[in-house]
Amino acid sequence: VTLRSVPKNRRIVIATRWFMLSAPFSYLKWYAVNQCLITEAFSPSFSSNRLEQHSLATCSRAFQTSAFRPNISYSFSSKAAASQTESHFFAQPKIKSPHKLINQNSHSFSMSTEKRIVSISDSYDGGNIEYIGSETKDDGCLFIKLKIRPDPFTELEQKSHLQYFSFRALVQLSSTLPSPRKITYQIINAGQASYAVAWPGSTVFTSNNINGGWKRLQNTCYDSDTGILHWTVDGTTLIGGNNYYAYFPPYTYERHLNLISKCCSAAHNDSIRCQVKSLGQTLDGKDMECITIGSGKSIAWIIHRQHPGETMAEFFAEGLLTRLLGLSYNGDELNGGSVDGLTKKALEMYTFHIVPNMCPDGGVRGHLRTNACGANLNREWASSEGYEAPTLERSPEVYHTLKAMDKTGVDVFVDVHGDEALPFNFIAGSEGCPNWGKRLESLQGAFVASYARANSDMQTKVSYEPDEPNQGKLTICSNQVSVRFDCLSVTLEQPFKDCKSNPDPDRGWNDRRAMLLGASLLDPLVYVQPFLRDEGSFWESMQDMDAYIRPTEKY
Image 1: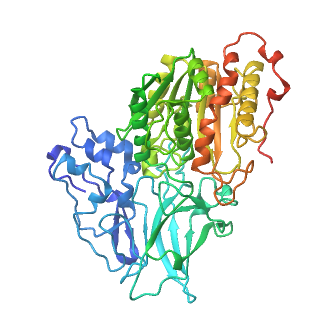
Image 2: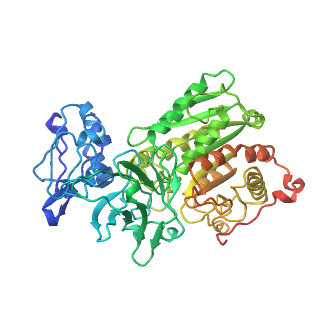
Image 3: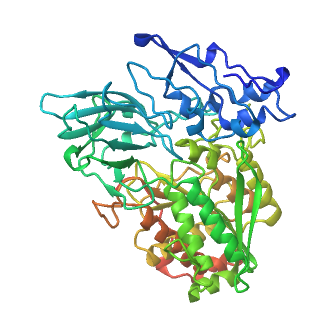
């Protein structure tokens, strides 16, 4: 990849260390730098060290799936051209391979050299899949083989995570080839996933609209012997249409920006005390937006989606902000700032600092757990032996957030996630931290019990096995915050699977229910607020229904 318009001392040439030979066809798979790095090449502050730091982690996901002839060079005539979307990257060379037909506007591949029957694409915000091949059986059934792309290599954990996937399948009419009777999608590297043990019982989401209408495919099956996750759809009913498939419904960056815009509009409403600000920027230059709401003396920090593939976390954030700001659930208009009575009480008790998306770079790339350069943000909250964290070079998202928290202080903290294995919503606490005692135990017990009473999708008995005393890792967000501010600090997990508390096989735990659980968070926060900084033995007057229950993973 050559930036011909850049002065020679700033040109980047991606050498042969970043290509992969495709032996059967003697083509090269080129790995190209991502938009962030290309844009930075035009900046006086760019250095070769920056290139080395990002290494393969900064390669464009778009180029990773496309077979290019080795004598092709790509150039950009201006800074604007270099920062265009992936679709423009494919617009210049008109390449046709006899083995794969490359769609010039995405990295979609045909299953046929003549007519494309099913076109597979992940070239959209949050997409993640790689087409491997296809085979039509004698009975007219089409089998499509796919792979999940791994996250960049994580230095601290010494691995590349993978599990989240999302892609679009366009089933097209053909005058020369018979339409497939059934289509079976096979993810052939599912057995290599970070949490392969979580596949049994998982069901894939599908919709013909990326923005809603998601339902689960009950015939999803995982073969532990082959490590293949597969599901089948009726090909005859899909002709001429498209379907999206995902591990969990995507929360796109466009939707994120729309949510921020609605919060900004609410900030102009005199009846709501609201401010939208940027805590700093990510490696790709995206703002880390924080919405501050309320006028109370208690400080609540609520962050979401440190792991970008856990998209339910940002749906949770949308539900919470919708209730706090009186936004419309139809996503179009404000409700004039009208809020319910408990929300008014919460806004008088608390000043909320809410970060809807801690890892926008990873979200756009379709990562499971890491940011642009491969950092697992939920392991970046403190330094460990031989590993400095957080840093501006590797984890600016955590660096800026922690810096802001130090300025405001924290009285209660919630870190919102998603869990692949456990089919429940649950709270994980800070039992392994050195400051754990009767005070934090009682606060957590009352918080969880109150939450379960407010919304039965939350429960009290199932969670991760608590850490043994003084064995909690302070590199993990909720543990670090608990010790740093001596406050109630919890991790809230939502399931990728159906929620066994209230099962719904067709929809399972989904985007809409995550929003409702987010709205319900205010109930337990209001309930425990009087006790957050109580220096007395407040637990002696608490009711039995608020008692702490030591959770377990067994159910």
